[in-house]
Image 1: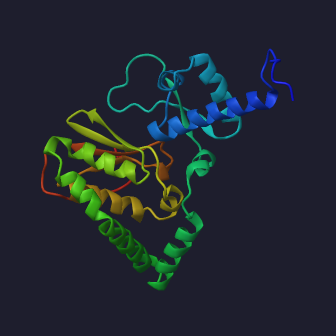
Image 2: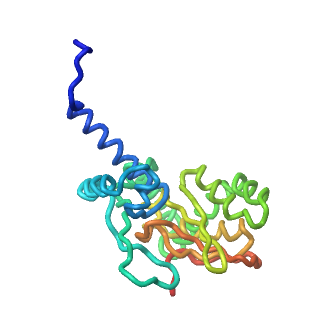
Image 3: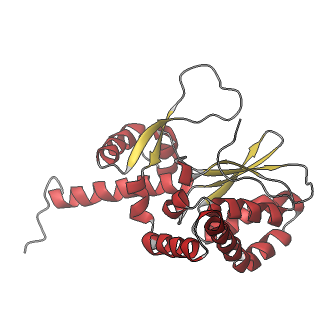
Length: 244
């Protein structure tokens, strides 16, 4: 093989590999940061918006991401809402290494062994609470070692270490804890007790009532939990969508 002569253009397989690598970076950025505009992705990844849009078109065609109207909390500004791109179930599956079927089968067995119906639902809820109780140590240490005003951020870092890609953002009269990935999302679609137990766990850890605004299991792009600025005695919140 001769090395002295270089082609004016890289081989097609090299181009294909580069394209795929960039698309993977875009999909990963959507996973880590939640539904994103083309402008957001371009800024994060150091690409032009035109290049990002071209890759997004391919990812939409491959059913990895899907366009959505940007969700607005609070007062909507004038003008057309920006288009954001969120991972589809297929796109999440590419990152999700959880044994979804095994977990769902195990929860189904627990529910049936308890007698089904309300007893079965209560048994699954008890399992979900026990699961979070078993994980409480590291989370509690992270939260309690932080200053009161930094506890939501400390919880987000602990969640990210467990694969939830969590961030925080300011909100009117409080904060929002955003989980951009959920390793058990498919199972939680069938067993919402997992989301409910998680919300109760956050409330207990932070020592205040919290409100679940959105969940990936319900089809939202991000699991979003509202934490008010004022701390009251801990009380569990209902998981799921904001009823308002």
